[in-house]
Image 1: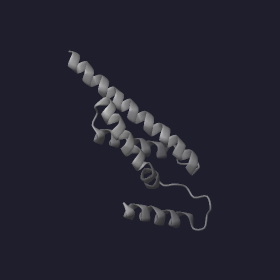
Image 2: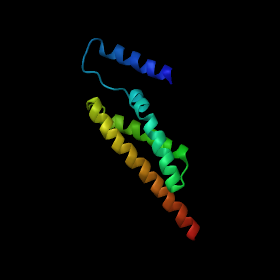
Image 3: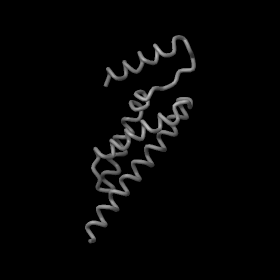
Image 4: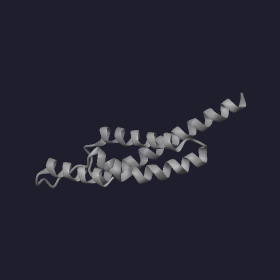
Length: 107
């Protein structure tokens, strides 16, 4: 993990070369959101009886989609938006899985 952080910092330093308008990379965004994704996956896995690994993958995909769509925003706004999008996508996935499981059990 330290290697990824250092690699992201080095990449940022190469890209900016003295510029004060630094933009976050997708790797850096993922590293910042990694703990949040882990906590949300544990919460929703317990609440909706869903696999936490699946939820973590949904969260990682949400980070990539968020970055692709909103990478031009300043870092603070990008983080705010990513929090919301990750939470919503993980919740929606967990809820849909739960509905699917319970509908199968009824039949």
